[in-house]
Amino acid sequence: MQLPSALSCNTACPDRATQPAMLMDGLWQLRRYQDCFYWGEECCNEALHKYLNSEDKEQSKC
Image 1: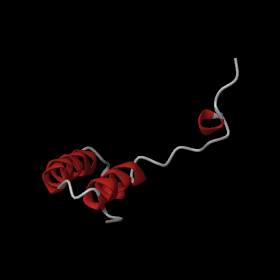
Image 2 (image 1 turned 90 degrees about the vertical axis):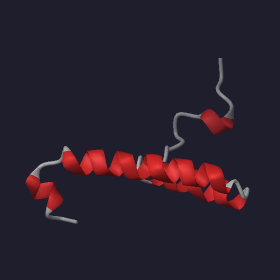
Image 3 (image 1 turned 180 degrees about the horizontal axis):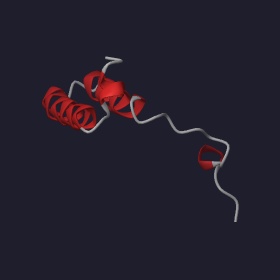
């Protein structure tokens, strides 16, 4: 079974930090501002939890 070209194994996925930015940009372009607000809060929550769970050495990079 062959995969469609869009699903080929050679296609790289955007990194985790890029994915929410792409989502937010798409929602903004669609003028879905309430969804932007909701997902913006989710993104901030995720970033905060990642920061709080990181090592002190990683936090000093910010």
